[in-house]
Length: 622
Image 1 (cartoon, helix red, strand yellow):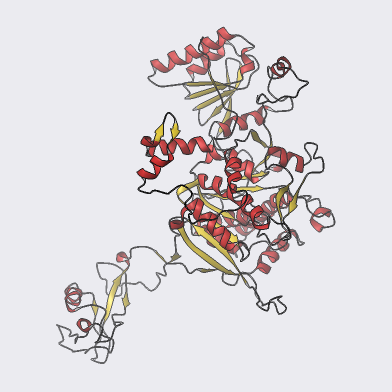
Image 2 (spheres, helix red, strand yellow):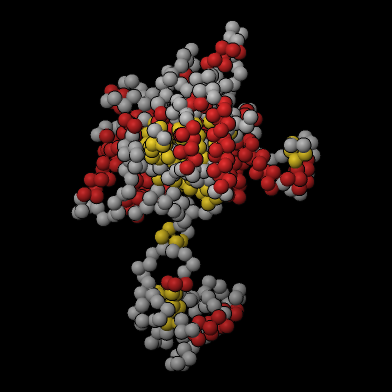
């Protein structure tokens, strides 16, 4: 008897997705479901002899990174309304949890949807909180660290430079996260990564591997220190950091247009005068050295020492099109009319030197001003993040920061929207790294970096709102969204069968546990958001609660998806769900209470309704 499709409760299988993409491009390299790698090399016009050395970065643990990437997550993101702001209206997200697990969970819903990624990861100077100590990097690691399971003394640790795998540990931490982040980037997406000299070379190497060496846009330089260090260990004061940038292209600087005007009412519109003097001597470019004569006045302006920029044929065309500005005196220098409408772009190139007059101390002053005390050491200035985010070019994009820290990126996004009327959305991800118990933030109730980040967003939003109400200082656009939905990483709301049980357990006991496989402490909203995310819907998707056949049903995206979490499913409910004409229906398996006949009838009902409408209704149980 045919039953409904079983919904997967894991994150996207990254390896399987890559195999399917490869199969679409090169079906001929698959044999009996396996990849013939030698054939793939031939298809690509390359042949690598077995054992032949190749250029590239390698380190102890690199192979293990792929296992970590390909291990699906069975975690979930649980909504936390009391820590959110405008939960039901906002399109911004703050997620507390280990960013590796979170990035896995975001794969289905946000694949190819993120325009901008900015991260400020640990610089690996030997003191940062960086990598799990002594055990695997997975959900259990995170739960142990946060005290949700018995940690047995396990902990995340710093990566001291005395450790033999000093650089390898850092690379093994960064590689899986950047690999998963790459999946989330749109085709025209851009990633910006702050770093210093310590790991710049290694970062570029793994970025070349993940994003493609050809997609390096620039290594921007930021003068982070205002005054030089007069007591450096090696004599040189390191006053800069970098922002490594990969993608297709940045927007560039806004072209200055105030010099364009139309004093002579030229029908071609506004123009500015442009220099026509050349750049080459007569020996080098003799064809650019000639006398220029106004055909109407017959004034001969001679030839500059470096000649003209245009040859006689091009100059004749400019004269014919009335694009030359002729001085009244022979001593003057003819210039060209450069029309605004002829500009290929409103933007010019951007300098590789960024963050002018913005320093580390600027970021410290900004957060101290917000909190009234020094809540975080060395946060990036809001202006610096605004500058790089603005270079992505869009004003309706998703901006992701999965090393969010104090959430300078969220602050920058809200400020940019207020400045230019944009509708950018942010996703912040931050591990609940514990604050020092002797620190002022801890004493004031901010126990973790995640606490600081959430509070920073609230305070920054309040300050921006105040600016809107002060017409003397605010001339921008009202921001559309000052809120955020808060989520926390946790175990799945469902007991996921993995066949792994102890010697003292028997299969029948395990099966009995999974009859009612929904965790008792899970709320309907917890379950709703897990199903949304794992069905491929963003966490900000519009959801309404409706009543069908006397039962509560969640309507997603105006009824495209219907989710029923009732513990008792009836034939009347099945008919009502089918009448609503959704594209997909998800019900709890336990709602059928073991009635396989009812479940089979539901499958046939949805199938018949879909056929009558010449469409398809996907029916899943979980």
